[in-house]
Length: 424
Image 1 (cartoon, rainbow, N blue to C red):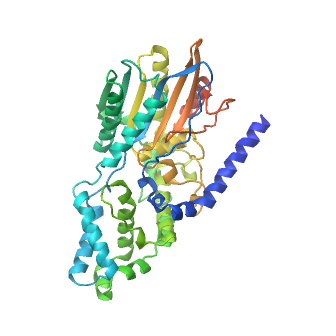
Image 2 (image 1 turned 90 degrees about the vertical axis):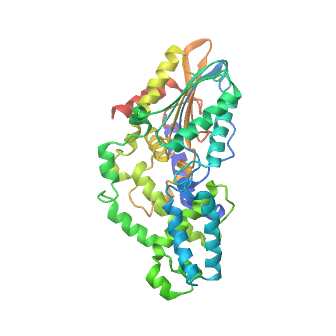
Image 3 (image 1 turned 45 degrees about the horizontal axis):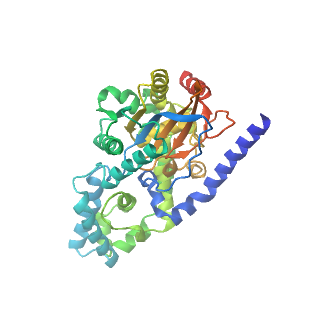
């Protein structure tokens, strides 16, 4: 037992050191990671570990974020576009600024009216996840197996569900899939407690003033503004440098999710992208993860979801009537669930925004189409002997439950652990 504890602590501190060393380097090497939750879904996955002899998969429990989307609002594009159009008309742009204006016009041809919508890439992501699930666990999806699919009432989530399940039906037309998007299920698909909402309140939360100062320290727009605008009088009267910087940053990181092949990364220094990413990283951490001062109440937003996972698994195990339970929602729900379940180090608890990048990164927890899957395996000779493994974005991950055969855990042990989390 002591050796197991030592090994666990060693792995934990290695993870912390890895975060501290790699966040800036990762973003420098791949600027798209500066997008945080706008990072596109990964396309490469580690090989899965074969199940122990005699065990076969029979049930999958899943929660997935919607796929790649446009920026959340039409205004997120038009604020910058309208400003650059006005500057163009007044001949207040540098050559680079003129080029950025032309790029913004190209982007808006596609993005206009699509604020918050699922993109074509988002559809492909969910079709791919479904196909790999089918191929990795074919025993689950054989014959006319029944699958429950439910999404939040937000259209991009429903469209993600349809893309996912339609691919399954293409692979096996005999599958019986129930599609639902209803307010009835929002109590576990996208739930926040009043206590959590009080903590995460962006006006009165106990972290707000500290965050305001941190955000100010991360935004240094003068260099960028100088490269784009040639008329100081126009800048004085029309340009809020911080707002322009943040608007261009949002458009920059969002481009990886849409079809138009335009890039804005040439506008940025690596440190600027890293600093702006830190702002969003802390914002998501406060709102959806395990800020130390929250004492677990934000992660506890996922309790209703975890309860549904347990109840659905119990029913599937007892009756065999349901082969897969598929749920579709949002980044915050995936982050809540990862924190509550303590997947890897996603439950890390800190309070200082300047230290957060060392232990937690939103692009690692919840890229577009991020998902958590619990895959259940049964021993044919001993039907009550059930194993489960946890996948995060289709890679095998740890939870703090003892096991001698990682990534496989005894479901009885995992269920006990889950119930302890629910009873807190």
